[in-house]
Amino acid sequence: MSGERSTREGILLGLMDEFRGCGFDGVSLSRISEVTGLGKASLYHHFPGGKGEMAEAVMALAGTWLEANVFAPMEGSGEPAARLASVLKALDGFYAGGSKSCLLDVMPLGGSPAVRSAVKAVLQRLQGGFERLVLDAGLPKAEARVRAEGALVALQGSLVVARGLGDTAPFARAVKALRRDFLRPA
Amino acid sequence: MSGERSTREGILLGLMDEFRGCGFDGVSLSRISEVTGLGKASLYHHFPGGKGEMAEAVMALAGTWLEANVFAPMEGSGEPAARLASVLKALDGFYAGGSKSCLLDVMPLGGSPAVRSAVKAVLQRLQGGFERLVLDAGLPKAEARVRAEGALVALQGSLVVARGLGDTAPFARAVKALRRDFLRPA
DNA sequence: CTGGATGGACCGAACGATCGGTACAGTTTC
DNA sequence: GAAACTGTACCGATCGTTCGGTCCATCCAG
Image (cartoon, rainbow over all chains, first blue to last red; front, side):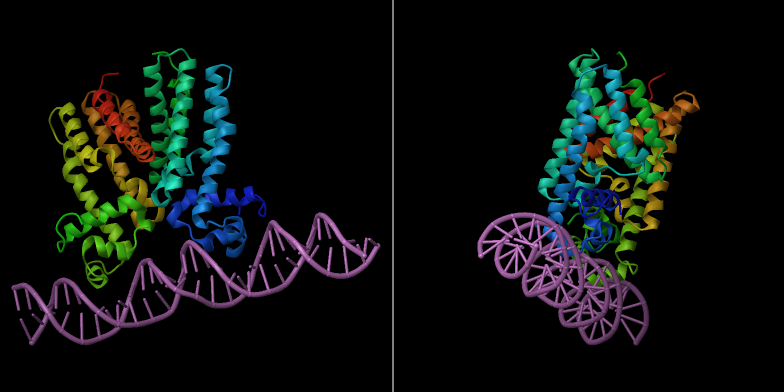
């Protein structure tokens, strides 16, 4: 039961947590009903498309959150190092220091094609953003592509490892390593 | 329908593919029945514990496969570089070049505590194996720990990114980078 | 100011389908 | 004949979904 209910965003925040914890298939409507405090019928009032639409809405919410807290610093102006720091701080918060899974990891499994393409779009946008950061630090384009992919891989991988080990340290170390090395001159 | 049915290992191989594709919650008994060609009664004859026991058996099979194809080279004798090459080749095959997900990623979501602890054990064992490889290459223990975790993260992360993008290239690049850099002197 | 109509938010109860799981009577295999 | 195995039919529970309807705030007519 996170955030206020009855507002669409409040509902979606609870929903997002649930999806992150159990994946699309692992979350039942009854569970969603409990978490949001809404009856099943009410859920269908807000999301006529059912569970699938709820998943898409969560992806959309995550997208707008990323827009404000990640893409904005990434593609904004200012020192690349400072921008990177903002991005990493935001992501560290979003993943609760490594204790919450990533939607990009868990949603494609049972999700609809729409969800999958949303995942793909976000990944591409993230990669582009990281690339931009490296370019702005004065490194060549080829290196930027490699590092951007590496950052994505490090974040996703460390989240998976952290979840598997039941220990957030790998994620924390990955974030720290990114902060240290991501923009380092070749 | 992969491998021969009717042999326990054949059943489990089909089952493993299914779990890797859809996660624990995403696979239904009817689907398992289709894939293995066995009726539910037969499935429950082989796995009296039901779906949960099937998942555990798949984890166990993956464990013995790792034992033979990954841990053996890792912890055996011979040039570390050659051992690393065997390990990476085996893993590349297991993940079908990056087109199949990792059980360590998808199973913890809906899996039982037993499955989760199996995942944890495998991760720890993998990390230990990678560590051993680095140590044998003459690098210090602290560096070995960092690189071993990095290898795990790179493999898992690139699989997630590859799945999300629908493109196996990130995984291929990650394997290539490991082959190139993992044992490189500091 | 009042009355009725409108429409959104919400809910209890139930839908058909499918879930994971079982009982049991064969059928194979040795 | 015994043990291993399997097909069929079935179970209660839960799945995602829908129906019928209540509440209540808003708005408009008189």
